[in-house]
Length: 432
Image (cartoon, rainbow, N blue to C red; front, side):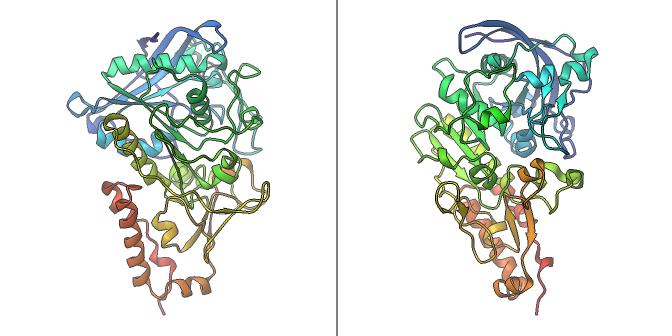
């Protein structure tokens, strides 16, 4: 049961920036530190290799600390490291006092290599990694390859838990990182694991190979594998899936499984693999043919994190959710939709239960790969809107009722009620 050694890096550009404005951690009394985490990792096949990667740690003041650490497996699909779940979960982490660590678990984020998804031509772009992008700051880092990524992740999470005094560590990851967490659950997690729960966000149905064929995992290789379920009796595990993940590129449908004693799956209607909340003001930079998805998965994810933490600490099981409704045979599946074109079933939000737009996890035919992942938001024909909502007042009342139903079902938090209500768009309706 090894832990990495941590050596602080001086303040500087950690290069882990999202599209949304950064949270002013200092104003809330939080601290942010970056460290080199080093040690000797063992691959699933038993080979040992030295490593030195980085970890970014954000922690609350001692008096606000919950004792929980969320260890995010940083996403490398673009070739550069990103922390999509920090973006979605930051508000809940801050108000709950959970420390957060962004762990450079994969080779390409540290050493550089092939990107799986890129803006523009879609894939295949090269990346310099941290070492190539800033050799003065990160030249001492070394990642032996993704055959060792699972042990690197565990060792670094264990070390950060000691640093921040956490007695519960939750594994968190989105997209490619969720795929690796899925493999971790199936093949790596054991009695001495540091993780007391897993938030698996937007996994593919396929599991990555235990060790990649080359030095790095790629999404092409991941998606070429066979679909497989997750263990349902191992450790509290919450899987959150969008429409894109179930029938789109990630195609988790063949791996659908019923809830189990320690597994819950929430498929969220009207959501995409990535969305407007994630990309914020940089939407136009993507060059998508339609506005990107404006679904409300962020609120489901925040509720999911709180539910998972309570499950791991107190044994309180999160609610089960219906699956998204799908029709058609293998290879020809499609979502069952309502009269406005929004998908039925799944976790419901006011954006789909009191809809004035079509929110989809897919993009128009011919859209780039990045735009496919961001889904779409399209207008509803005026005559359909008029039939559905004779007046703005009826729409607003229905939207508020749907918000309260979402909170009552524990798929949104009471603290987020006002934020949800602020997203109603009565201006899209014309009163008679």
